[in-house]
Image (cartoon, rainbow, N blue to C red; front, side, top):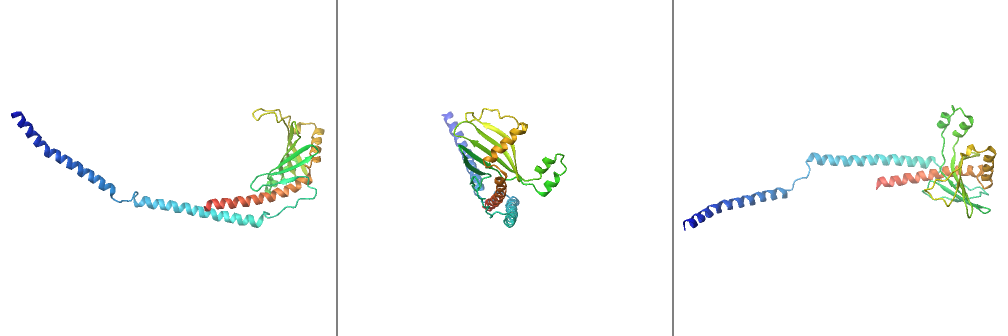
Length: 253
């Protein structure tokens, strides 16, 4: 009986203490909950102001870029022949395939049992300053070519079966230079390194002249490339203006 009385007294003395602990925990949890529910800004006023300032600064930079693009568009519209249509000369031997947005123009024709495809690249233009800078070179022939604009050409001559010939050329005003010649075998895979022959300029001079005549008969001659020179300059102007317009649309979006 004495032991039972002692246990009851201990339990009764612990109950108020447990109640105080529970109430304390509830008050602590309520304080935390109220502090999280208080509507306060996530960032101090100084940080918020900095973010707004950064955003407005980027917008101002975009506006400045747009003004420069507009100025360039106006300049290109006034000075370039972007709307000029080059008239194809009578007797031009090739079909012209010109797709807007592409860097090259493709020419196609057939000659006897051959298919001839010419890939015409944008002209490599030489300004007056570039020409003056090259006047001090030693080789006079190289000087003349360095001072002239040219069009890179890749001429492919193929037949129904068998290998094909691929010429890399540079078309100058009234002159065509063959830079390289490759005999391409369709049976070789891309991961096989085929023998491409010697440097074209190391070939016998008579053989070089014979290949120039070979291309001339197939339509690769100065009258063709002189027209292509003007044609590609106009295409370059059109593509540049289109590129500027797309660039402006992207920045404005």
